[in-house]
Image (tube, rainbow, N blue to C red; front, top):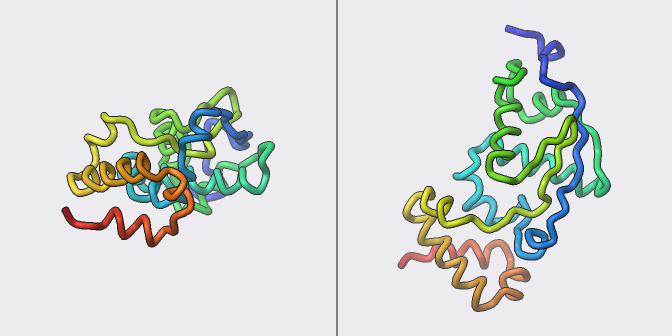
Length: 164
């Protein structure tokens, strides 16, 4: 087994900066939101989702950008000693890129600090009960957008868990 300190990545230090997108900033949800937990987690998978949440928390503390040592992030996420282009951390980064949530330019990772609503194709990939919950969420968002933004996690959670 490789020593955790000797893991090799395509780069060791990654610059991280917010990805400015006024439309997504207006309609999107925070990665730590209940919407993200219910709907983006099954689309992204747990490693990419946790990576996204972790890096956006770093950006909250450093809004103009920050630097992340990939081997440290790998260890902090509990991903084990496998690094490189085929390791779980790099694959998770590429997965967030695939879904348009990050953009890698050189050694800079631009990351959306808010997640857009799922598109129709992504909704269709959700399990049936989550498709129903997403439809309920969209209906609530259309009827009461301000209330949805102010609502507590438990209020939204109860709405999403209601049976037909």
